[in-house]
Each structure stands twice: as structure tokens, then as C-alpha cells.
Length: 133
Image (tube, rainbow, N blue to C red; front, side):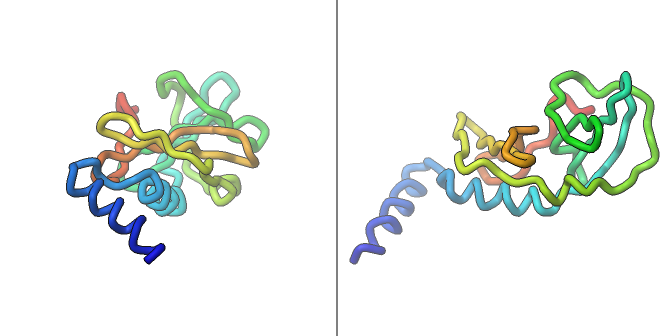
């Protein structure tokens, strides 16, 4: 009987149109995070910008001395040949998810520091970077 309560609450939420909960969004973010690959590299003022995604760009990070940092500005710089980065396998997620109208946001961590945000739509599909680089 204890297990029936959460299931009924989930079904009630779906019936009321609330969509999947933050737990489902976090699980989907984890799937997306594990599938990220380097799409492109750029050099800007001594910093390497790494564009991560699947078919579309989902996350943009700045890398200095082998450590990723958040990059808030637009994608600029000269393109570089692609190469693998070891830190991509070290990326993890924060324990909480922010639910906003129309989207979920999962915070991407590298060694405990927030380095980026993955965005999911209401249907848990990854949302590309906006504006596209």
C-alpha cells in the first residue's frame, strides 16, 4: 500500500497536465549528459570553447588549463580541429532540477562546480542552445 501512493500521485499529476516530475527530468538529463560528444572547438582570447551535444549543440563550455568553466557569451573565435577531452567523462549532474514553465533545467557539474545548464522541454527532449551558435 505504501508504494501505491507515489504512483497515484504521479498518475494524478499526468492527468492534470503537469507533465513528468523533476525525478524523470533528472533521469533524462543524465541520459543526455552521458551521450554528449564534442561537436566543435573554437579558440577565443587564449581560451578554448567546447561545443557539446548530440546532433544539435546543447552545452557550451570554456576550457582553461584542462578545466571547464561556464561560458556565458556568444560563440566567437576561430575553429579548431576536433579532439576528445577527458573532462567530458567527468561531468555529472546536481541533485536538483529547476522546473520552469515549458522547460526543465539540469545543472551540469565538473568536480562539484557548476559549469553549464542542460535544458529539456516539457516532453523531456533536449533543447538546443539559444541562440544557436
